[in-house]
Image (cartoon, rainbow, N blue to C red; front, side, top):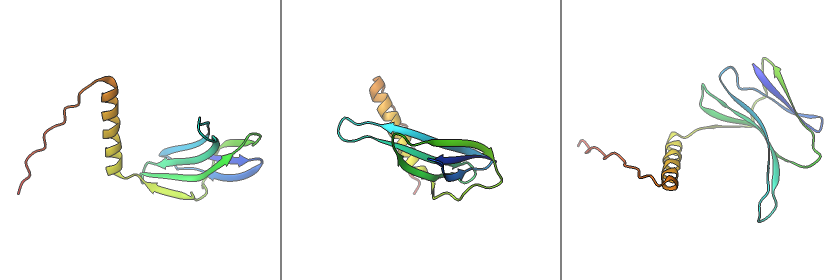
Amino acid sequence: MKTFEVLLNGKKLCTAGVGDHGVLTAIVSSRDCERGKGETRLEVGGYVESTGEHIRWQSRRVRAGDDVRIRIAEAELAWKPSRRERADPTLIAKAEEKYLENAAARLGWKIVKPKKSPSRE
């Protein structure tokens, strides 16, 4: 399987891999806020399609001068993730609905929701 070997300042942090069907990510992001301090983070994670799990190996702050290296490799095994979470379908549906409502309001559209069918008692 494809893996990411992630090193920080020469120290190996993890070998991440999700198998043949999934998404593997290694992200360095920097955020500066008007109010307060910003931060720069290294996140190594992914999504396993077969189980519907979001997984994570690393989530840590990094700073100026740090050396982050990602080597793309092929390996039989990856390290065990530090965190696994299944997506909650109810929360996903609510988030999608809220996204559509906000987009419609921003675009000046009106959403017409289907009428609920009478309950069968």
